[in-house]
Image 1 (cartoon, rainbow, N blue to C red):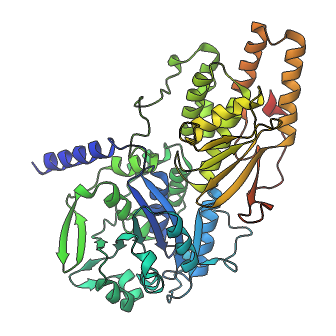
Image 2 (cartoon, one colour):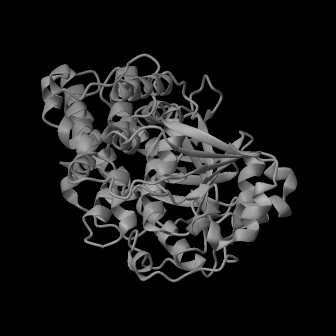
Length: 493
């Protein structure tokens, strides 16, 4: 009977999540001390389209805040989320635990905390521009949230709840509590609801679950699997500890609440969570992203013969989201277009930079209104949701060039197609036109063949130059991921 009840609760929770419109349910700020369980939690929160991570704060705990900052910033850069803000709170005392300190979350070459933004500045900026009520997720002590509430009480009123990972409240104890008992005591008196999530499973990630995670095709799942396969001997790797919070956030119905004054303690209401919970969160299957189709099919039999052999590679190399946007764009465009495909890749890359969903950026396209370059506008609209109908897309009618600016909050970046790639595309289209002419069926068939190859071979992480634009001056500066690139002629053929 207990298993039946648990299954019913899971089904009801899943149904609610899958009936969601385009806007995510949770806007969150994460505070972390760089623990190994925090890496798992952050990966799940980043992977879920039903969560919008507004900023991550590094604070002291299992390591000094500076060490935690390097791990977070390098992780986000490895995911190409250079525009997701990271702040630092150097105040809390830290313990130097060698295993989590020595484990690199990503390649941190060139990453330093020396010039890291203060957490008060980051949180002030985020809450100035994001008016949606925010959940403050504390994976360490409550020092960060307490100090911000004292420094910026007006802005702190936008925090609707604090979700804190800790062992319990009766009695109040645990590692995260012991890091700063004074701040915890102050937040217990605060009017903002404090939700404590705990009672951990210390041997949760079985070999069966790890095998399932390794089949998920996104960087968050891959980095999680790397942690498990690292050979590091630490209870918090295979245990479900701070990474209990993403499960609570997505499936609160699976938890039982125990209240003490204004504080609620949430513990699992079942003996063991299903592996599917973790896999669904890591794979992004927490909410239906579409409005008409339940999903864009990956079965190659749904597609024309000339495309079928490329579909598995396109999805494996570029992910399901770029594939879906590519399919919809070329149907909208009414022919398989090269610049339409470039627009898809550019829009997905810009969203990836800020780590945001659709309909959240203003876009200015410099592709103009003259084909073939203007075809890029269709790809931009589908991939970003910044459509003309939503009033989020402006097309500049100058000489068409494959570049666009993207503004989120008040941060603006410009993405430009690399000159060598733009010149190669221009050269190939000119040759096809010269030989066959625009009015011939052969011309459009050859364009289709080229577009399919470009879709498969062009990596959105290397084909664009990205520059940040200063809000007041309009000055441009290269971003962190604008680096010397290997030019491979094979990508064009």
